[in-house]
Image (cartoon, rainbow, N blue to C red; front, side):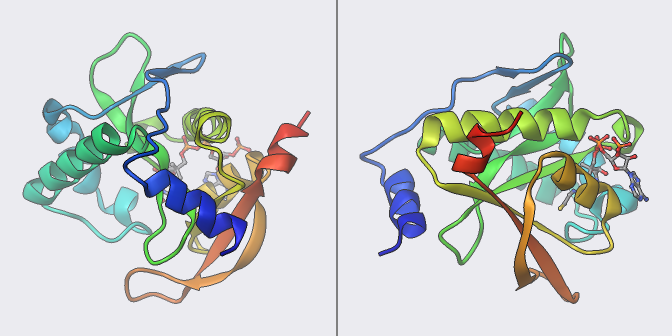
Length: 193
Ligand SMILES: CC(C)(COP(=O)(O)OP(=O)(O)OC[C@H]1O[C@@H](n2cnc3c(N)ncnc32)[C@H](O)[C@@H]1OP(=O)(O)O)[C@@H](O)C(=O)NCCC(=O)NCCS
């Protein structure tokens, strides 16, 4: 067993619970576990064609409610996962960010999406930076990956700002060409300026 799969197995082992301290606070944002009342925000996010262009197409309110339940349950059971992003001092989620298992692999990926009127203000970078930092310091993992379509310029730029490196091509979860897999190693994260 290589070190990636062994650390993921440990993480997914219910007997070895590792918990991310929440909320995660950044200068402008709060990342907290999802609540049922976040369905309105996530339904609006997932109904926006621009937001969902590279993350699987628009989804119904019912799908959004299921996503919120799944993210909430995953966090409660594991102690880590995708969190609701809010502006500090505000209740409503502007999107999601956090680490989650990358399906069919023994990897943890950083995922993020924000409502459109919050784009290009540095929020995704701020939320993802804090999420990666907390994940490395609490989960005992060797690396974190991100999957992104090559056309998704804003997301590529966020990964560049996080100093994630292109690792390989992977097949996406829905009918499009290959996505790109980026990775940051814990050792390199520790050495960042
Ligand atoms: C990806 C996403 C979360 C980025 O959020 P954000 O808060 O706008 O990100 P940031 O402001 O931290 O950084 C965005 C960067 O992309 C740049 N950018 C935006 N549009 C761009 C474009 N068309 N071409 C190149 N760069 C672009 C911005 O200028 C900024 O870089 P800068 O800080 O050097 O100026 C947001 O666009 C989003 O929710 N997209 C839809 C969901 C999605 O695709 N998620 C990622 C799946 S891999």
